[in-house]
Length: 127
Image 1 (cartoon, rainbow, N blue to C red):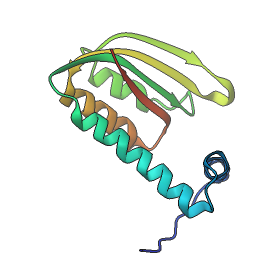
Image 2 (cartoon, rainbow, N blue to C red; image 1 turned 120 degrees about the vertical axis):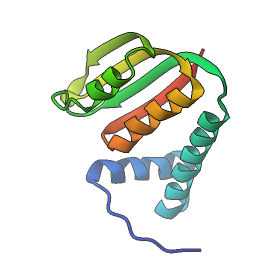
Image 3 (cartoon, helix red, strand yellow; image 1 turned 90 degrees about the vertical axis):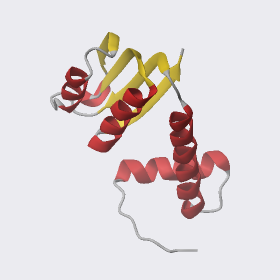
């Protein structure tokens, strides 16, 4: 098994410890592996989508003033049928978008969101 070193901010460490406690894992390494396995499952679910898809794309992001999400939304304006934006605590924003597009375009949007490194939460719920 490979040994790696990673840097985490205080909030990530807090959630890593919560993952460990919630699932009764023996240590942080097991919690990291559990989180990776969860991400793998999510990626496989996205990869299995085919044809046209419709559903709800939910994101939570930090820093309301940062326009990165608006740029992604503008790029995919024909895909987003309805959008709700709500301000949360600590300058975070909730974005709820009704999406109708090809599975490939949805994957592109989600990759762009994840690729920004600025989303705290991303989930697509198929309709």
